[in-house]
Structures are given as C-alpha cells and as structure tokens.
Image (tube, rainbow, N blue to C red; front, side, top):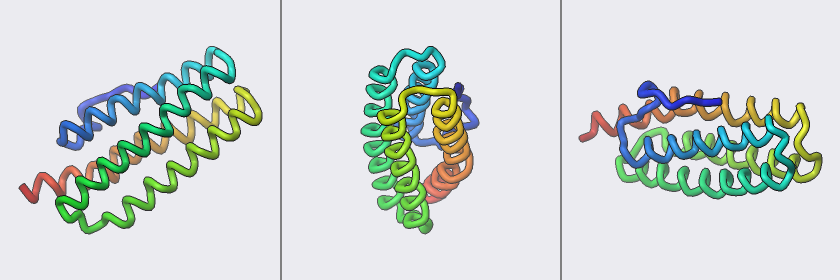
Length: 133
C-alpha cells in the first residue's frame, strides 16, 4: 500500500490532488488482489485506473507544455510506457485471473513505478514550474 506524504507533493494543487486519487486507486487494486475479491472487482478497478491515469497524464503534460518544461518529451515517454504497462497488466488479469504472481506484478509495477515517478520525475516538474513563477 502507498501512503500519501507531503514529500510526494510537487507543489501544484491539481496534480497533487490527482496523485492522491491515483494512490487510492492503486491501493484499491492491491486490496482487491490481496482479498482475492474476484476477477470482476479487480478488472473494474483496473479499468478506472487505466482511464484515470490517461486523464491525469494529459493534465500533467498540458501543465508541462504551459510552462515549456524542457524535458517534456522524455517525461511524456515515461507516461506512455506506464500506460502500456497498465494495459498489459489489465490484459493479464483478464486472461489469468488474480494470482499471487499477478498481485506481485501489480505491486511492483504500480507501487514502485508510481512512488519513484512522483518522487523523481514529477518533483523536477514541480521545481521547474515553481522557479518559473
């Protein structure tokens, strides 16, 4: 499970709020997997997570464009890679169901990536924007 801390804040209210909601949805997926709530529940939460991640990344990318973030293309590519990983994971869950292996992959893919992405890449965006204001 991921817990929101101020150290994950990038200093933009909209993006921070979205990050908090994404954390909640990732935790929902992990909880559904851990409780073996069935393929349908996990698929439902994964679908929401896929849709919301795309929306969040679009908002974040628009913010980067607005402030002419110099690493925009690289950051966008990182987003695209995660969207692909989440889609692949969703397909795997639909195909194989919820197993220990899937739970471990969900944990590694979503939790590790998300926390590392915010604490490294998104922090750089936040700092850049703060210095541009």
